[in-house]
Image (cartoon, rainbow, N blue to C red; front, top):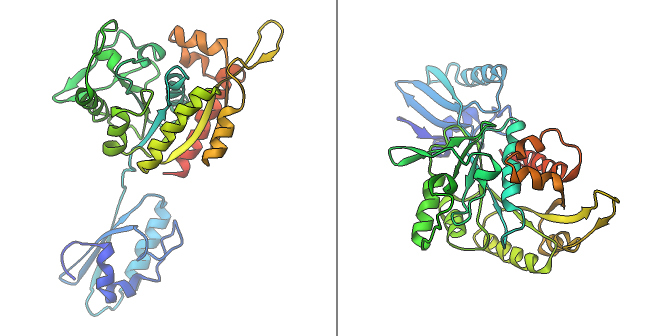
Length: 343
């Protein structure tokens, strides 16, 4: 064996493979040969070099692994020395899309809330407002007066007051200008938003437009989201459209994280009575029927309505333990757990 060789081809060199097959990946407990821990091997002039991913290994474990490899080739007839180079591989950026079958169900508020809470949890999160015709994020994130700049052909996200990189057509076009574009131009604009200089963001929250049109198709074909969170109100008409959205993502092999029911009940601020102007429990039942996880209810709340209209959503979501804000926070924290489980 000579030259840099991907570890997957070590099976073609049974001698080298047999030497290390009993060495365990200390993070998984599996054989070093069968995991993807070793990314390349090189044997030249009796000098054997391995390149090993260090993700998940402590310094002590790295030292132990290096010693085990050296011991495996002591007095070896074709290997005089071994060298192990540990490298940190950057995890793939997670793309989480927030979708709805129809407009007006709270998709943009959920997207902004996810970004804000994940930022509080320590994630390097970016926010893409992909609703080209009706961008809402500049108002929700209080960035209406910040213009977008570019570095060559790549857009530079603006930075919100909470330190979240964000891009929206609302920063590029005049707020009062109608965007009357056909499909190809819309898809091109979306690609520019996605391919911007997101730098070290490890999570992108993508606020999709309602429906199952050009942007959704561009998303699943070109950018392959790691998961989609569907939001709907309890109304039958909204759930019918949400079911169509689920069908699109399923047919394209896009993982559906779960379904959220928004506008689930209203508590009167005067008498405390709870009413259900849009019905109750429809989204949870739909999730059960479609075989997807139900992620919870978000009630109608004056706190969120006032916060979104005034661009103060961030302040509303900080340490709130009641009202609609608490429900948004709970769902965002659940997404944080999901992300941790799918690193």
